[in-house]
Length: 396
Image 1 (cartoon, helix red, strand yellow):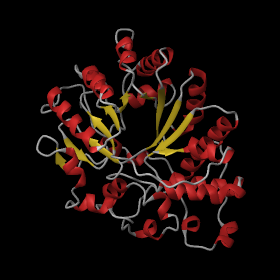
Image 2 (cartoon, rainbow, N blue to C red):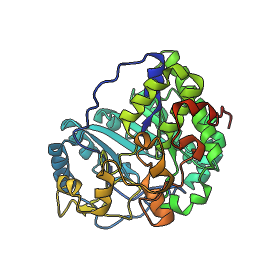
Image 3 (spheres, helix red, strand yellow):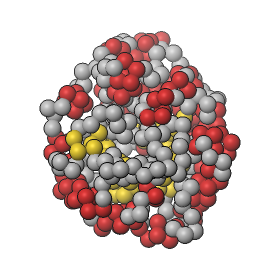
Image 4 (cartoon, rainbow, N blue to C red):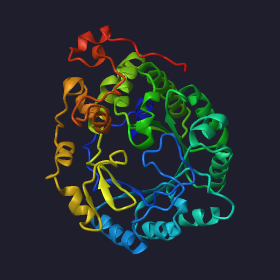
């Protein structure tokens, strides 16, 4: 996850660079159930409104939670499918909170209603993320269900009105990118705390629909708009959050944007970005699916590292005998092509490996969704920066 607002705060109120502390364990995104009441076009888990056999039961989930806690995992993101379809979701959530985890709920929002909002509020989720794919017509088309937009928005409002931190998640494709300004306005109009733009990653139904991935210039325009919006919010002294996911080239593009607009702050931002380090799949991000299989992140469902029914997560996660885990944990990662030759490799870390795997069969090939030009990332002297293409400014 790339935290745009954090860097905009650095432009407004720069903080001294301090030694980076590695997190005690990875953030675990846990797909507790594969069943979903929707069949979204970009679903990475290819969920459906049916029961899937072999899912972890409550006691098995609790056993895994004990191991995660002892291993130092700080954050659990409870996801699906649609996690609210799992009968024991509140038992799991309550136990996770009692154990001291930061607990997020990742939902499509359609099942949050007057019957369960009190239970959701009582759990004390640290964050509830709800996906919105565009305006009503677009969202219902993406979600393949009439009325999905209104139901999801009703869920957002219920959370907001109960003072639950709620975020709007927007997966951007070529089909809905033009509606990004509307989504940012919706965030403002509805009093939402957080906006998360997810670049389309190639997994599940998202892999089938990768021909709809946004073209490079559309991505750049979208990032310009997000940067401007987040900076304005920081200048106003607000505390909204703007983040992106699934394309670590965002960090490099931000640096170039800063060089164009705030050149006197560029060295400071570059130091902060290098400290961030980019992609952390297989290191600080982990996934457990509904059957207990462990993956480097949620988009690696085609690649199993081990099953928590047979081996503790802590043991699986430290095991670098697996070639993918060895490669992801290598410092630096050995990436081929323009990624490996990029002068900003230690900012983005080679970006998302699963896209390279899906398109080339080689997880260490260059990322096909990097939207930076060869001129922007080639090894050059600082004096040559003025020759680089200017970052574009708006508008979708």
